[in-house]
Amino acid sequence: MVKLEVVDDEAFLEKPETSKNGALFQEEDDDDFTDTDSEISEASDIGDLDESLYDRFSALKDIVPPKTRASIGSIASNTASAVSTGVTYGGKGVWVIISSVLLLGIPYALALSEEQALVEQERQQGLMAEGAQGLMAAGEGPGEAKAAL
Image 1 (cartoon, rainbow, N blue to C red):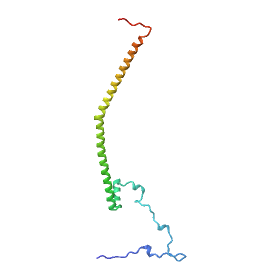
Image 2 (tube, rainbow, N blue to C red):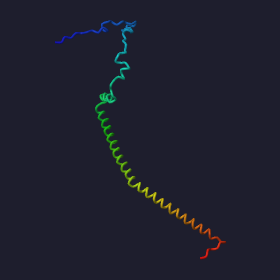
Image 3 (tube, rainbow, N blue to C red):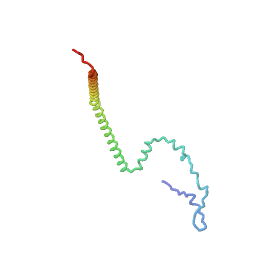
Image 4 (cartoon, rainbow, N blue to C red):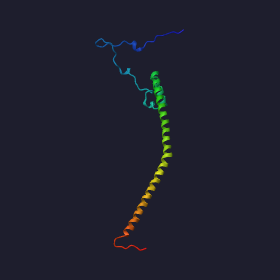
């Protein structure tokens, strides 16, 4: 059988002093206050904890209500799924564009440069023909005689 014993607190055993007005209070004594510094509350001990950021966030889960946690988890899951899908389709789109440029654009650019070179060559030949005709026409002046056959 358990036997209970009443232990009285010393602060309640002493009668408080009365003031001039008859109100009950105790005079504040510096001995009543204890030093608030302890080994636990030192600033140097705070950095010594071996906690990761994940551990700290997981400890906060009890603060957030379960319904809110479920909605936050659902939103995070949907966002991650949307980003993953976007990256997948974006990568496939970039692949199609790059392969199309390589297969169609490069041969087109080469054919275009060859066509420009051909046009430039024809233009130069035309200028050369005009230059030769100009020299022959310059030789036939009014004061010169034609060569006989």
